Structures are given as structure tokens and as C-alpha cells.
Image (cartoon, rainbow, N blue to C red; front, top):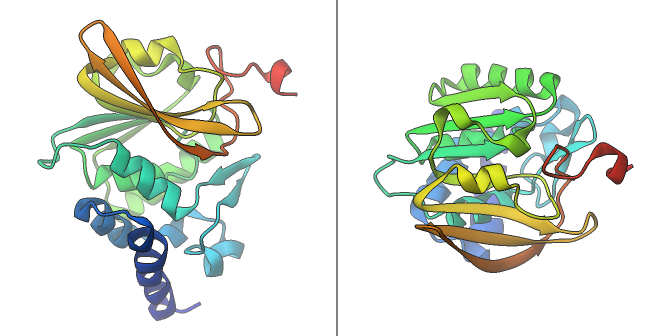
Length: 222
């Protein structure tokens, strides 16, 4: 597919998959138009990079469909002044972190698999996204060094929200995570108000499992 065709596909993605389904935050739409999704998928899938579907990225992981990326980003309700510090758990190919980097001052992202982390970092460098830091490790522990975070997003499903992530959420902060069974989850939005955490149920989703000490244990998943 030519660069012109890829650009047209990206425009159609925004119009038909995002705006048509209610994504209205102009900053989210601009980010989805700015970040070239085709750079975050395997070369054999470039022609379908802007289709309304998740795609495999190797290592039994996927890049979420564009609508889910936009929906979760919008649900974080990040400050309009691009001052937020965001933690992402599950870097994958890096697409979600790249979108967040357009709306936040700093993005910290944790990936369990080193090859995916290295691949994502390479694309971040290619795009000049200098406000993203990547760590390889068990994301269920979060990234305590840079806490607290104004927003936290997990891109893998766990039985419940890992307690360390809640501990690292700032006052007034928002956390978005897919919670539930391995076959089907509900996207939840949590907000911190002092010692109280409010929970809101959003939409049903299906994500790859969150493997870690405070997620699914590998033996449970297998």
C-alpha cells in the first residue's frame, strides 16, 4: 500500500471507526490522525493496519483495534493542558503509548517481553517521541520510581486491578483497566478521592491476559 493509500485509510479510520461511534475528544482524534498505526504492526499486516480489528504483533500479543485505543484514551479524561503523567502497563508494539504521548507530558510504560519493548522503543525514536520511557518487567508492580500518576492504563486483562497500581494513582487520578475472566472482561474506570476509590463499569472487551504477580499467574493461564 502506498503512503497516499495509508493516509487515506487513516482518515477513514478516524471518520468511520471513531467519530461514527462517538469518539468526540478532538485531542484524541488528532492523536489518532498524527500517529501512523502502520509503523506499529508487522510488515505483513501494514495493508490492514487501519482496519477495525486487533492484529497480532508476535509473542501471543496483539495491538488493540483503533476504536478501543481511542475509547480507552478518551476515558482517561486527561488534562487539556498536556500536563499529565501517565503510566501504561503492557507496551506491546507501543501504539497506545504513542497516542498517549500526544496528550500527556510524560508517559511511562512497562512491558514484560523484552523484544516487544525494544521494538516499541525503536519506533518511538523513529517518530521523535521523546516523552516516553520504557521499562521491562512485571507490570503488575507498576513503576514506583515515578509515582504517583495522574492516569494509569492497563492493556491486558486481570482478575482484578493489581493493588500496586491503585497505590500509585495520584489524588484525583483515573485508572482504566479490563477486569474479569480470561475470555471476557469489562472495562472499568477507577478514580481516587483520598482514601476512597470509585468504580465505573464501561464496556465489555476482550484483552490478552495480564501475566504477573498481581495478575494471572502463568500456571493459571496455561
